[in-house]
Length: 142
Image (cartoon, rainbow, N blue to C red; front, side, top):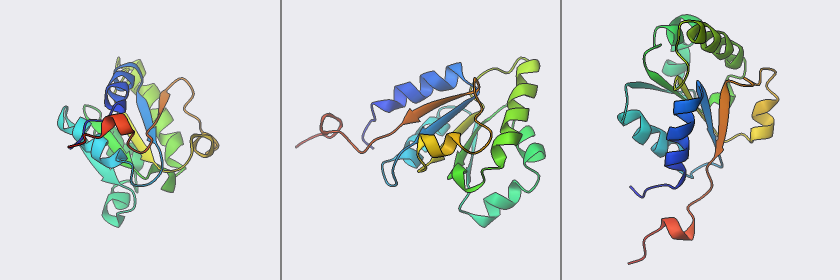
């Protein structure tokens, strides 16, 4: 796997914020980067295009609350916009208990502006990182 310049940025934001949104066009490596980061710490991955994973979130507060000690990666998070209110509550509850950073990594191909219009912006709780297609300096020529 080719290393991505933004990998260190995502890790740093996870150390600072309860939630990080990794956004960008389809097929730029968001999931691959998230899986790499997920192997570095206890984590759980949910693909919200997968019906079985969406079913786990039928009681999102319960399921995500039970994963409090893990990084929860939510891929295609823009598919369930009402989830942001639940995340806000969980983040605030975690903060009161001393959990401050690295709880959620949200992946999506929706633009930052569109994601911010979901009704719950997670202001002060989330950092946004935009992943672009590979740059010429990220690719090895051989």
